[in-house]
Image (cartoon, rainbow, N blue to C red; front, side, top):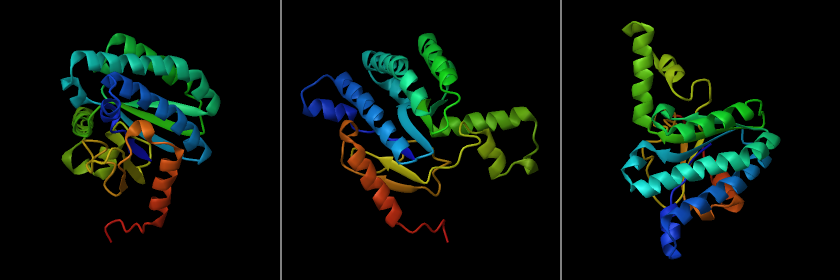
Length: 221
């Protein structure tokens, strides 16, 4: 499963709060949802936390997002390890501040043995950038043009070795992928809801699962 967590800022505005408070509420929603995903037996969950386009937002908001990420990693790593959650980061880590890279690296190492749920955090991520990076890696490997097929490209993506998502959820009412897992989501089911991300609770999660279970997947046939 993969989730585009949309609506944090709107949630804050509706309550007359600073926008960063909406992002903080969104982090709390992640905490509850992860526990529920483990209970539901979800093997892989990918969360779209920070797109590369987000750099265009005001500097104080971007800095606040980095701070929230670092705080969440420090405070939650032990529990995630206890729950059997393994963390991976999807995105261009080399563009992140050093303190953020350090926090992420520590969390990746601490949760490396988790076997209940693989949690991918798409942070400083963009689907087109991922494909560009994959193509660069393939070119650098020296492969000839006739050796390149879909498997070669998939194996060069950030998600190499992982299954493609069966279901992509977007909260907040919008109906677009926003440059998220654009290769991997070719045949994923897409589910949207009006619920803003901080209010997306286990009941809303189960509603998405129920809708997914009712669909007939044809894979283009």
